[in-house]
Figure 1 (spheres, each protein chain N blue to C red):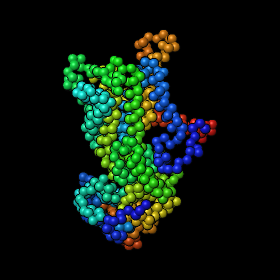
Figure 2 (figure 1 turned 90 degrees about the vertical axis):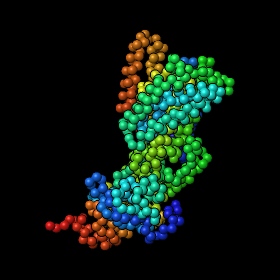
Figure 3 (figure 1 turned 30 degrees about the vertical axis):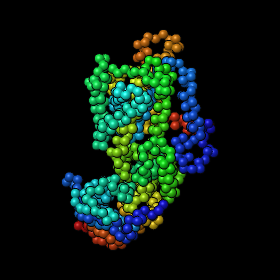
Figure 4 (figure 1 turned 180 degrees about the vertical axis):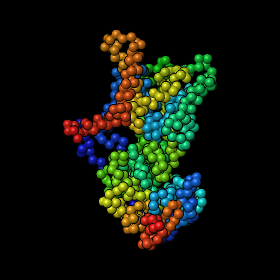
Length: 267
Length: 358
């Protein structure tokens, strides 16, 4: 696998994605209020906060599933008010979901191959014949998918329908499906929710490896503070849809507003 | 024991990605095709060919069409018969305009007409799902059926309101009309069904099929991965209606020889939906098995008492048919809700393990 994002002129450390004054509400419910932060190329950026703080909504805004009422999002230097999911995906934003959102009736290979859809272009005619260019394309992408399968150590479950897999492996396949898109920005929504210690350790290792080997920028929502402190370069903290802190893990963990948000305020 | 892939090693991804990666399956398919193309036309009698095999193939083709839409893309449709009708009437009009062009061309062309109509009625599918979409496709069913009766242009202003199929040749051999032998009609139909099944299987195993199944299993995730929902769903509608249209054209031209609008009613749509559900949603094999069960079982029930010499009145047979078919449907839905195709898979697994339990 080559490092994604080469040749776009954005170097490690530059701002890859900037969220500027974003507000999102559903009717009278304000999910996000005037939040600004940025994600730099090559970093692991954690988004934390208590339940209902607007973390998942933030991810949904970033990949175009929700359209914020106010604010701007700049990705790779291009500002846009509204981003459609298709555009986000084709520009290199991939994500995993809080509740596993795999294609349950399909095998592990087919799930990850589905992540390659945007990279496959052979036309309907050749697809009907499944010979010549269409088959060459299939094989070429299968090779890429096999590399991901090796990387995530899921060789044994290649052909198992994902609906039959245990939860931890499903999370791993979902990560594989996102990686198949060769994303520049990978959004992980609670990748370790409901996992035991070993599974968390495995998943942490994969996240760090993805970041190191492929230089993929990662935005991570996670409730396990230990994991967040160990993995992330910078942390943004949301509470009730507002940003209350932003900085290195050490700065954030000693921030009084964050401590208050998590532990409560003495009365 | 009997069905074991041990020792069959794949040395390339292409071999591993074949539709039938196991040698026994390939041999089985070859045997079935040999029987279908050589054995049945040689040894089948007139009744078996024209009243069993030809209808079975027509329904299989329609069931494949509906399976692409409902089984693979997860969009329920109750308009299959109407799309078959579109194919039939389109083919009829095209052959009256250009009678000298090869009929096969027009059968396929009428599939495209049906695909176009299918896309039109598929447009609401972006916004509505499940039962609500099923109701929206009912609109297609009723509107199109109404057109077949009320637009006389479609049946060339016949006083009877029915369409009659004139004689057509393929390489000098009549394939439609009263002079066409059942063997030739059967072989023409079998060729069409075989080729279209192969196309469907190829589509399903490639990028397009994965996009369809992704939309079926988790449309939000599919959308965020860059699969365009509307395009994917409309393509499914187009391909599905194409298959239904070709099936409809074949039904009138190669089976009935003439047709009235009553052929393409909602009952027919439900019949095909039952074939898909009982055969197995999301399985091409299931489309054939479902068509076989729903269509051939009544025939078997009708023929069996007569051949055993049991004296039963025709009306009683008819009633018995309804009871038994209904009971079987309920039985299958309880015992194997994933259809006959899953039953076949389980059977293969058992054969692989035999004589050991696991």
